[in-house]
Length: 327
Ligand SMILES: Cc1cc2nc3c(=O)[nH]c(=O)nc-3n(C[C@H](O)[C@H](O)[C@H](O)COP(=O)(O)OP(=O)(O)OC[C@H]3O[C@@H](n4cnc5c(N)ncnc54)[C@H](O)[C@@H]3O)c2cc1C
Image 1: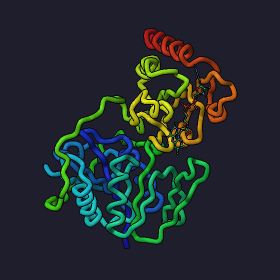
Image 2: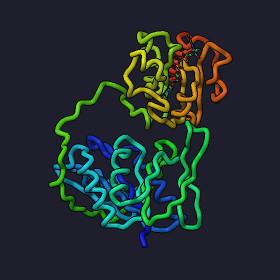
Image 3: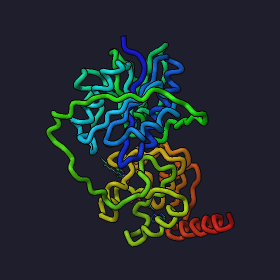
Image 4: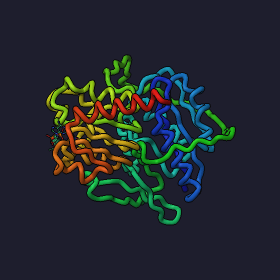
């Protein structure tokens, strides 16, 4: 009988993803209800020091798969590492953040082990000691609650939905190595070139300022970027402006872009099409700036400002600048 949780901790360039810490914290909270231990697994090269940051998120154990061959993400290498982690602790549930990496990795390992995989989980229900993950369907119009008929199940958790819960006390737990046979990796990433873009990863940002066709043209991105700089926000976009070539696809929010769930989402000149809403309607506070009082986005917004976003946004930026200058 399998028991407990294994949480895959994603790191890139020596930085642990915040969304992985959220998944780890949620595993801990759920383990208090359904029982079982929580193990964190971190994979990469020279990641032992990073592993030392994990005990304060309450795992019972941390596993480290450290190898030069795992320096860059490769599906085969990381799948081998995750499979070793599963072999070591025989968990009932495998968690990861719903990121590009995990969306590649978890279904592969799940298929290999003939186990189910549910992605983009936003909530959990309980059936006794069993977890029933819940995820949005049809662009958030409906929810599906899943019941597993297996001893092992994989889930990716939507970033910014579950709170990362760090202990203020000095917490310790065993940190152990797992050996991974990396000889079978047929495709290796030898170099990566990051595209210029957001300093803050869109799917993990607490604040997003997004622009749509209402910003009139790509020459007006600096207007939104100044507001982003004042707020420490990431810059998002609707598909209309991505398709028009005004900005790179990595900024796109929505059904065919990124799903985001920030504390604050400011939609500037965005109409509120269902496909856009699908990517951001779980934001905690939505502010819409649109010159059409009938725009659909206002039906979903917490606060609405009817006006020209190219006039309203600079005023907001100036007000924030003033506020920051006054301490
Ligand atoms: C299969 C499929 C997948 C899709 N996936 C996505 C997706 O992932 N993400 C996405 O965003 N869309 C997606 N779309 C496209 C979506 O249907 C809309 O076409 C798109 O979201 C519209 O972008 P927009 O709001 O920027 O433009 P528009 O719909 O043209 O809206 C512009 C808005 O700006 C307002 N406006 C104009 N001037 C100003 C001004 N000066 N100040 C303030 N407001 C102003 C207008 O009143 C209007 O409401 C998808 C469509 C399909 C069919």
